[in-house]
Every structure is written in C-alpha cells, then in structure tokens.
Length: 77
Image 1 (cartoon, one colour):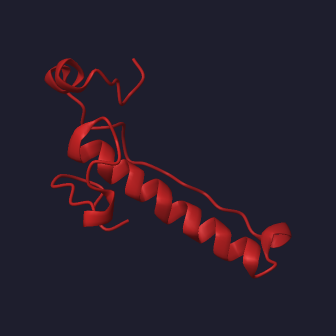
Image 2 (tube, rainbow, N blue to C red):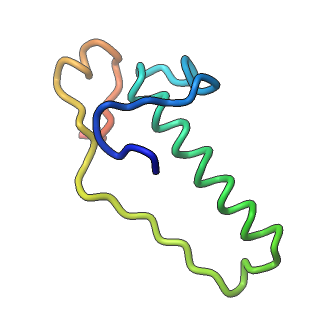
C-alpha cells in the first residue's frame, strides 16, 4: 500500500467515501486496491493456485478523540 502510516493521503476519488474521516477514506481505498488484486487473480485463472496473505504491524492509529469525533472504533474495542 502507498502509506501504511500517517499521513493518510487517499486518492481524490476516495475522499468522503467513509464516515470516518480521512483515515476511513484511506481504508476504503486500501480495500478497493485489495479487491483489484483479487479480481486480477480471478481473471487470470490463478484462483486455485494462489494464496493471498494480508498482514499488519499493529492495529489502527485510532485515539479516543477519533472515536468521539467519528463515532467509529477502528480497532473494535
């Protein structure tokens, strides 16, 4: 992904896509990128022989103030 850490800079077509501000918009973009990769694997006929692994180095950088502002718990706690 282009930026796993701050600053999150989603492409213009993803601005306002989420209800969680710029961070949510960036997550929306990441989801779309992963969807594109999965579609390319399927379209190429490699689905049966491909393993896709997504990892993270830690949970979201989502502070109590972000929860209060956006009403969203990025780390589901």
